[in-house]
Amino acid sequence: MPVFNLLSKIYGAAARAKNWSYDHHVMDAVRICKPVISVGNLTVGGTGKTPVVDFLLTECEKRKLKALVVSRNYKSKIKDTAKVDLGHPQGAYYFGDEPFLLLEKHPSAQVVVGPEKWKSALWAEQNCQFDILIVDDGFQHRNLHRDLDIVLVDASQPWEHYQLLPKGRAREDWSGLQRAHQVILTKVPTETVTENETSHSNDDLAKIRMQLQSLNTTLDSSESSALAKPVTSSLAEMNYDLIFPVPAATTVVGFCGLGNPSSFQKSLMGFYKENLKGFLEFPDHHNYNLKDIQHLQDLLQQHQAEWLVTTEKDLVKIKSLLGKTDRILAVPIQLNWKVMPKVVYEFLDQVRSV
Image 1: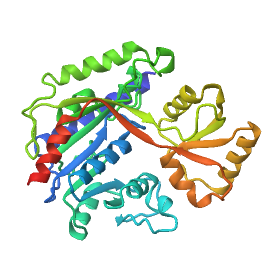
Image 2: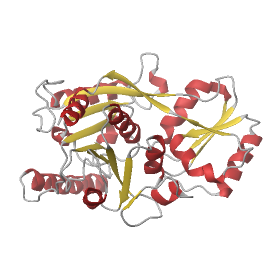
Image 3: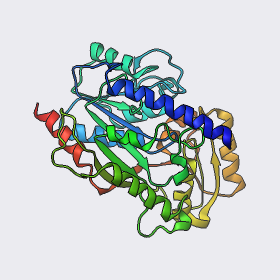
């Protein structure tokens, strides 16, 4: 529609003006004394940032680095900056599902939530002890300086989704990736996945690859070093392997509240096939209640299925609502690297050696 074209041009001009002001130091970013990693993306919706933050926390643990994650208090009950507490009786609702899940999986780390990431980073610097700070969804958050920018590009998205908002789903245009130190192409289909099982054509994926190649003329550059901004970005590729909790012969009903629910649904369909008896979508970061749980149980009985299956992010929010007889299981995610994130490893190794 013409109005969307006009609005996208206005949005793009505003985004470019903001980036120009930071690139030319008209506006300056806040700095903290510890190294900062940002994990972000170009588009709105689920691109898989939480599993990548989970991966970074694991890599920090391997190197005995004390990591702290800063996240926005999106759809949480807390309004001020605070440190996530696993002992809170309604932790996932109070602090947010993703921050609480990350701390639950990595209790030796720290997670701080708040309305503005740069303020949360300053608060953490004053109130917490850590070696490295990880900003969840920080690429467009230019008012906090970062030493390593990781940007995820979703290979499962149709090409038109990379048009600027509101016509497409892009927060900024492709040229923004020139700020990135590490670009990760996520949800790369395996050789066994057919075009009919993906949400876009092979031509779309080829266009995305060509666009990335044009912006990264020196991939996997050995000159890219930590604590000093690399000249070029490095391109990594991976997909997400789901660890299904029950065999494919089991009848299940799936549900989730994600930014991109179709990706999870297609994964369940690919594994359980005709044994996936139903699927229910909730809004992203949905706050579940007892009525929702009852509706899911009714759906399970209606389809005469054996289990309800959902994501880890959803399960962490409904644990307190479940009874002992509720048959709900989570599907954990495991990263499967096709091309390793070389710059990330180099950066973490240098932080450890400092």
